[in-house]
Image 1 (cartoon, rainbow, N blue to C red):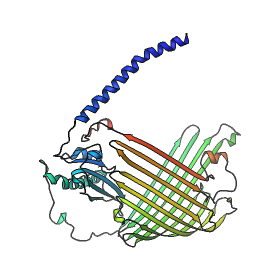
Image 2: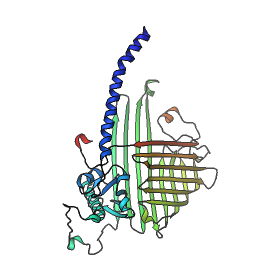
Image 3: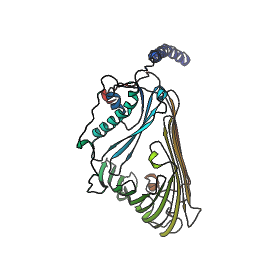
Image 4: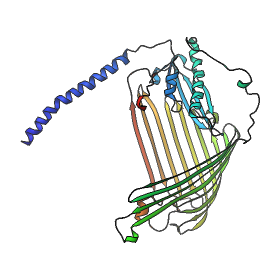
Length: 434
């Protein structure tokens, strides 16, 4: 009887599965036919937007004299972008226009710069105007399209007549504080956080001062124990102030140094003071940071440490020397992007105490519509000299109240993306926020 019941269930489900399969197949065919039927349009420039910070939806909606395509292989112009903070607290976005097909070899970069007080709408308009200027360089190759009108402001207001008077002398200050409180019948969580910074960045100098004060207190009501022992309260504190200064020594070299004051209950650190000179060499000129970077750095310095508890090496206070070698590789091109990093840190008083970290990520287009994303990191840890001598309690382990001993750390992620369908990507529909 059970076998016949199962057979009838399978038999009744088969037509439903067949119907679903037919519908899915029909949808794929109907979606693929129009895409295959689209013929190239040689009279309009085709653009592929490969920029996560250029307001791509806004550009597709507002720029109507070009066609936006879904795949880079179909594009005449491949638009890349990269942003970083400016010395004044604003943003600099490098827009890199790469010619493909009939425009192969016709590449150029434009910069869109906004200040700290600019709104998101202002930054969007600045990038929009910059993209228009960059695309007109390609569109004008076949003549200005009908309906495109150009307007150029003239007069004293449009042209800078001299250096800008800056009463702050390039200094930018930032202060941010936040607090939150969560509670239910058995648990409460209170956090206070303060971040502060002061930066002065010019072409020749980079000076940054920043720090953080963070305190988190959690209270738990336990089921077991004496009535006066059922409440568990834990507190985490983290305070630091960091200073960094760098001097440009040309297009490839920089000289600098770091200073740091810190304390952390998680790291068994009552107080740390360190001073570390540093030097860096960039294989490519720093001006090419938007598309490629290979930077090699070395720093060596001194630190004084006081611990909250006696460490595994029976120390409550000590003076340490440490050095570090680092390598950073970044590449962003029309075929994708690559990042890799290498760090080697070592204590000078005992060379067996070291840490080696390797990380990397890549996003590469393998074929039309197909891309692979890979990232991973690994570290060899042999420098945990601040660990308390006593073992960790179950509460400290479960609540991450202190650093635990570990000889390594490994992580790896991989993903594939495949898309197909319509060749063009001009239309933006914001209904329901999607």
